[in-house]
Every structure is written in structure tokens, then in C-alpha cells.
Length: 486
Image (tube, rainbow, N blue to C red):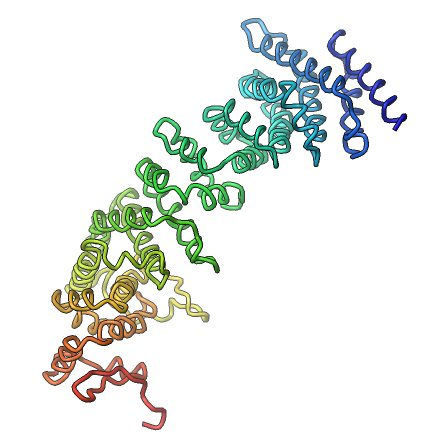
């Protein structure tokens, strides 16, 4: 222990000389020695408060010098060394916080958070010949904030209070992937339910939108995806605020993240609140007509195309939500969602039959790879199939919805989509699934289908080709597999 005490004294004395003298490369070496020493846990646990106090004075001095360098008559010759010294200060601070709650609290009490954030802000505005010179101290400074915040609620709260929203937004917008990644880590570490509420306020929404933009343009950046899935998607207020402020392209990214979250193995506990599901259902109802523009060729602009793709993504999410996830089955009773879906299917089906267009059925199976995935570039691949899937989901064990589809003349419509269609992979299976849910324990629907068969108005050949028979038994209609020897 005596060796560490002597080491503390020697390093403290050396650091003290930095802010008493004109900066020189030797000062940088002193800081590097301190940084290296702090990698050792025993030294880190023994370092005295005096050493940190002197380090804070050095950092404050660097703040003043960089601020002067940004004035009307800057001394640019000294800036490169100042930036190197700033980076080394941050490295020492970063190392001191590793697995050390004691040092985290000590640095916070001494005032390192305030000075460090001020220095980071200055780095963003400092004039240098090469912006690359700024990135090293920026990265180290942001890493320090991350290490300081881990497991320390008071540090998290102070960092948030002093950097939200403007500085955090600036750090997430730096033209350096590593700095952005570290800033995302800091944001993720600091966030909690109360802070997400602050983010959802109109004046702060740009921070959330920047995170979502990073999810789109840098999909491999794990921290932003975690921020979105673990925090943002759990707030209906924030989801609605973000959605209204997004372009259609950005909305698709949001919906893709929602879809992925729903498909997690523990999707029953995905954390997406019911109010988000209601919002998405209403949004689908209000905007679903946009997809029809794809058939007429009026989708001449990218904006119109993206609006249609947003509708398609909304449908995918609603299908997943109603796929027997108990927390979202209330959507079966969402006002007019079923009516909207049936009516949209009618329109899409009629348009596809009226002329050759993007909604027409096709038999072009050369566009499918060996694993069954389509390689077609059509934006409406599977759209009609998913409309039928949603109808089937909404009718599952729900007599009122079964009756409503019958009243809307939707049963013959579903039956008319039992044919194989390369533009809608698995549409036959989804149609069979929907028919099964429409007929289950519903005598009137069963009688309707039986009457259609007797009158010859329903063609069951496609069902038979897929290995199913429609059979009337004791006044009820059954969908049953064909025996192999029949």
C-alpha cells in the first residue's frame, strides 16, 4: 500500500505542474502515466481525492484555452496539443470509473460532469484544420460519461440534467460512427420511464427522431435499436409523437422494429402497450387507401410510394399483433377495423381482376427461390394474403366478427382467393385458415358456404388441389384433408 501512496503523491505533483506551466509534450506523458496507472484496480481503489482535484483543474484550464481558441483571434498552433491533453484527461477519468462506485461518486461530487460536458460542447465548435483531430477527445469524453453512469443513478440523473436534450442530440449527430455509438450507449444507460416521458414532449422530439434515423441508416448500431425497443416503443405518447413527425420512410423503420419486437420468443411480454396497438389500427384505417394508388401508376413520386409501403408495414404489424397474442386480441373489437380490412380486400381484388396490374394474380413461380422466398421487387408482395390473414385473425373464436364478414359478403370473397398466386405466397393457406375461423361454430356461415357450393357459385377446385375437401355433414360444413388414396 505504501508504494501506491507514494505513487499517488508523485503523480499528483506531476499533474499539478501542468496547469502551472505552458503546455508541452512532457505534460501529455504525465497524463498518460496517470491513465496507465488507473488501469490497475489496486491503484484505482487507492488513488486520493487530491489527484482528481488537480486533474479537474487541468481539465478546466483546457476548457478556458479551447474557448479562447474559438474567439476572433485564436491561437490555432496550440490547439492540437490541447486536444491531445483533453483526450488524455478523459482517458484517465474513464479508467478511474471502471468497477469503482467510489470513484464514480467522487468525480461527480468534485464537479467532473459539468466541466466534462462543457468541454465536449467546446470540442463540437472548436476550429481545427482537420475535424479528425476532434474525434479522439470526443470519443474518450463520451466513454467517460458512459463509465461514470453505469450502475450509478445519481450520475445518470446529473448527466441527463446537464446534457438533455441539446448536447445529447449534438453528440448523436457527430460525423463519426464511434462517437455516435458511444453517445447512444450513454443515452441508453441514462434512460428510464420518467426520462422517456421527457423525450416525448414536443420540444424534445428531435432527439427521438434522431435515434430512429440512426436505426434506419446504421442498422448495425445496436445501442439505438435497444433504445427504441427497450424504451421508446413502450411509450404510446412517444410512438405517436414520433410517428407524426416522421417521413413515411422513417415510419417503415419504426414499424419494422415493432414487428421484430412482436416476433421475439417472449412476445407475450414485449412491453408494447395496448394504446400503441389502437393507434396503429386507427392509422391503418385512416391511410389504407394509399396502397390503391400502386395499381393505377399514380404513385409517380417516391413520397406516394413510401406512403403505400407504410400501409403495407402497418398491415404486417397488425397481423402479427392479432396472431393469438392475448394482450392484443382486443383489436377484434376495434371499431370498424374488420370492416375496413374486408372493404380494402374487395377493392384490391376487384382492381386486380379488372385489368392487368400490380394486384392481379400471377403464376410466375420463376421469381421464387428454392426456399420459398420471393425475389420479386413488387412492393405489394403478400399484401392481399395478409389482408385475408388479418380477417382470419379478427374472426378467430369471435361470433360477432364471423357474422359481420358474412353480412359484408366477405365469405365468397375469401373463397375466391383460394387459388395459388405467385404475387401472394401462401394466400391459399391463409384463405383456408380464414374460412376455418369463419365457419367454426357458426351455423349461418356454414349454411352460406353450403348454399354457394350447391348453386355452383363457389369453386372448390383450388381447395381440392391443396388437399382439402368442403364436406356437408349433419347440416354443417367441414373443411377436411383429402385422404391420400382418394
